[in-house]
Length: 225
Image 1 (cartoon, rainbow, N blue to C red):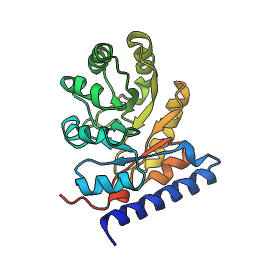
Image 2 (cartoon, rainbow, N blue to C red):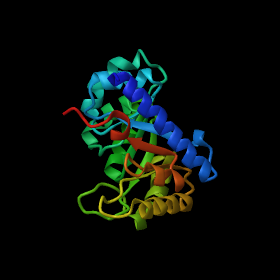
Image 3 (cartoon, helix red, strand yellow):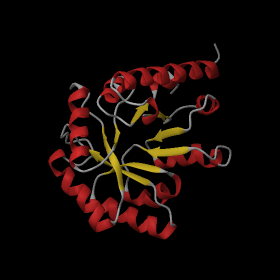
Image 4 (cartoon, rainbow, N blue to C red):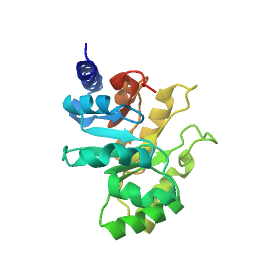
């Protein structure tokens, strides 16, 4: 089996699984977006995913994403790029120019930088607030108890139309507890979109309300480097 056909097969299986779990949870499969985590993947694998019909991709680093996607933009006009990794304020201009969705808004300093660039460029990427559901010191994100206040401030002070919430649960804890917490916080803040779930736990995420799941290994296989 070629790499291209293997990725097409994996993608079809993922879509089927997401659809089955969504229907079991009383949801429409079309309400869940598969985000292909393309960081450090080869050009051949990226092109295979595109050929298979994948159009939404997630990247962790601005510079790496620029190198991979700027030329492909012209060939795939329906492409959607999401920043799913931490964003430094000095990369705000590049991020606003490249990404359609920024999922890692988590501090006022970044909000100011994004507001400045969005106004200057006339471009408004959709924004998710990252929540540190595990309250891990080494991880980015707003603490759960501060989420409602932060979302309100983003709306009122910076004029952002926040799209949803995003989380990355601690690896040593049951992911479902964190997905349920994120769903609760979203309901409390009037947000309908939840970015949660990765290759190992996307099924749990879908069953608990995820509107997008970020999948790398289950789509592309093990990384080549």
